[in-house]
Length: 466
Image 1 (cartoon, helix red, strand yellow):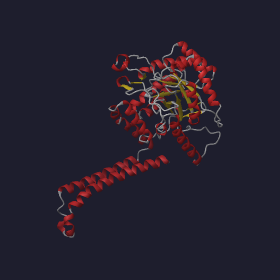
Image 2: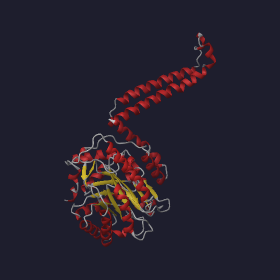
Image 3: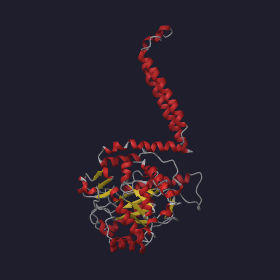
Image 4: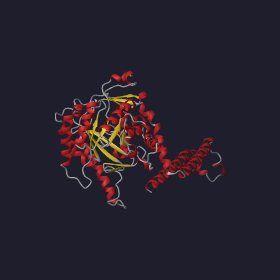
């Protein structure tokens, strides 16, 4: 109902604005052109000598009023879903503008736009076939935004409003840090890829905690003031920050000598605002970080973080699930070690994968291939999907996996799911395609599932691994 009121109000404002401009613009000219004859307005000749430009103004006024009325009448007949679709498609017009800007400035501008509500808001329900439950949380669809886009939780509400099933913020470090020197983001547009060496640039956990706390408080107030509260038996839609699920990705400071202490501090400060937590030990841009993926190091780290999370007091819903994000540049032995630790410690999930330090075809021939940093985007798809499939087999499908790396279409998301992913994330494709990509991907994914006879996402998980 509220959406229809907003849509109606928007149409009314649009129509009134056009009519007002149409009337007052030409009329201001017309009135000034006849001031000298105001005293003789009773005479017949006073109004007969209107300049030809005034006549054109009146014709223009009439035309604009007619167009406004006709346009308003047409828009008023359009259903809300169609109107919402127009708004998303219209964002494609902005993409060429962003392409002209410096990569990091364009990224900052996009985050600002989302934080201020300058992006469309999805009003249409997701296809029922895309809904699923993971970790006791209800996802309206399995397509999420990976960490790295909204590093400091500035635009959570706006990004969730785009229709993502979940959004992951971060990586967040305990102490604010600038990251690596600029330039540090490089576009490979024709390859649908990006190379970055940001190095965990973060405003720190204190700033992020304040933002997430405000979001959490707003959500609680909305639930309290709701006229139709959910019963205890009714599944809760959305998470701690709004209509979708919120993940918080935690990293370590570059100069820290105690990685475990950094992650524990992040858990203590941010876990109360997260629907799930991610321990990022796979970024290639923080020296020594990937060494934490070794069997002993990973086991010790996860045990400390789990203990830190579990020692906190939680309500009936319990603590947030704990996931680990791994790299695609791992040997078979590395994967076996990680799978063994995940099963032994009952890890809640794995994200597969982070960016790669390799340069697969066709990136290897690109002039920017020599830039240091992690490669994301389409060239990463096959590598990350192979690691995903291998990990699904090693963990025997007992641990939920999030497939990430090179996803740019609904078909890509579907292939990740068939390779073992319960949920899917994207980043680079969203940076290039913008908001219009999200409803397109969801429609494509639903079509893929129905085409192959699956009745739900869960049915398709790991279909290629049997």
